[in-house]
Image 1 (tube, rainbow, N blue to C red):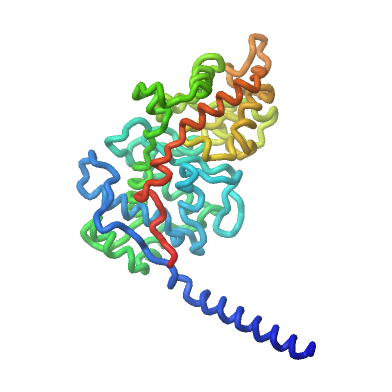
Image 2 (spheres, rainbow, N blue to C red; image 1 turned 30 degrees about the horizontal axis):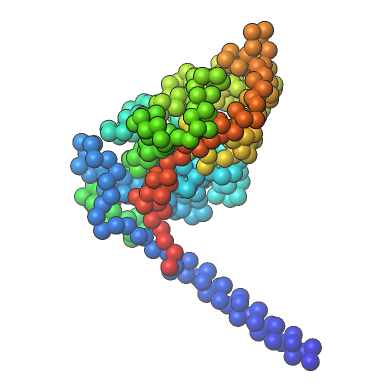
Length: 365
């Protein structure tokens, strides 16, 4: 009887292994590209008549894992639409399972306040946590060539690799009038797509920009007032604008001793050590964990840091020091904390995170 059971179990195991191998032999058979018949409008104001076609091609490239050396990671792997184009882990996973050095920042509103004229080739707001890049088009190659993130050391090989994928032929023709790839075209299209990822449709916008006072609850109004007055969070976070200047790098007292020099590693200036770019708060309720190293899991944890966790680091921002030069202790009451969290939740743009034109076009049958 035991022999019969053993033989039966072996047969079942062989069937399972064969089925898995059969599916593995045809990994692309279950995946197809789903794009609308009519090109989505990514910008209605640009003077480039092919911009929307280029952004469409950029959308496909953004979500295509073939941009990594072993076809394991796409740009969209670390910048997820449902999370406001951030990631939900402290450090994202690279092409060989290694973890990135820093938390993946949201890429929403890279074009600052200029929603009408996409800018991908001129210096603008500083990019990355340390501001090491200011031109959106030039940032595209950085994760692609990063030894942890996507691993393609020589970008000259990427156009040839992608040219072997037949779904790009028509997309290239629509955007450029021919079907040839180049790294410049890859960078242009991906950057055209990501600068079109703009957020301006939140309850905060309805309340603050459009004057709709009914958009907020009483608790949210309280949080808004605390944010802009009592605790002066607005002085660094600039919720009324989406652009940043190079001065918007702050040491907020995360550590007494720096384990990551941040801006200082780029500028080479010791007074920049421990400073990181102040992040946008748009969709902040979706983008946990927080800080450059993802150390805080919730908005409550972040507020607790400002309440009683600020460290007297060497370059601690003066706004976070008390009158004696020590680290400020705000001692934020629980009621204020809950009101602040309620206000931060009004920054979520539900239209953005569900907009089909920003979604992954690769579908599984």
